[in-house]
Image 1 (tube, protein in one colour):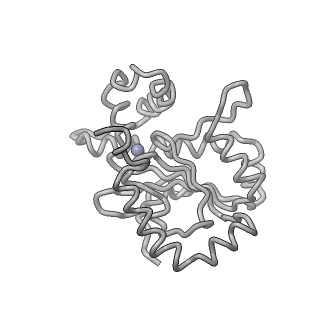
Image 2: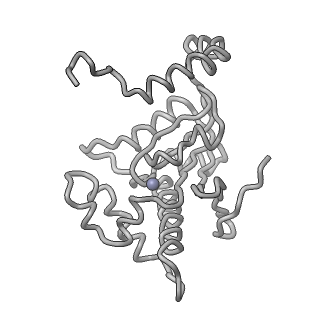
Amino acid sequence: MTDTDKKLLPESLLKGYGKFREFKYARHAQRYMRLAVESQKPETMVIACCDSRAAPETIFDASAGELFVVRNVANLVPPYAPDANRHSTSAAMEFAVHGLGVKHIVVMGHGRCGGIAAVVKDMSPLSRGDFIGKWMADVKDVVDTVDVPHNCSDHEHHTLVERASIVHSLANIRTFPWIARLEDIGEIQVIGAWFDVALGELHVYNEVTKKWELVNEA
Ligand SMILES: [Zn+2]
């Protein structure tokens, strides 16, 4: 293949873009035009994993302008740390809360999360690079806090850690003083959710009972 044969975009993206133009954009052009002029005003922020099987816009059937989404490896929220480092997820939360005034922040993890599984098994596959080992280090502590029942399968163990890590991220969100303040006065809701990739089912964390509950379809 010569350079001139190479497409500027992979074929699969070109096809998807063609469908978007033909169907979604064509049907909702006015909505896009209005959003362009009026700017976005989403009420919900979702912090999700980069995993290609757990896209928030797909799971919540969201249209343009409805969800403010940040995705990172294993849907982690680090604690509030206004230091000299670059905190992309914290920056996104700051903009979501102060710039957009979102009413809900959802941390959505998912089943079969490769990042979580790698930490449960062994950090070494994640430690070779410059970034990912450090990024996931917090989850190592979460692994140690999880009670693993006798005869628990690897899959069940990973699910427990995926969910415990979401709860840990909820606690970290509450270390952001302006979010804790808004939650105290009922202006913002912080939610933990977990998506079962195989079954397409969503579970949410009940802060009162400390249990995960399957969401009934509306
Ligand atoms: Zn994941």
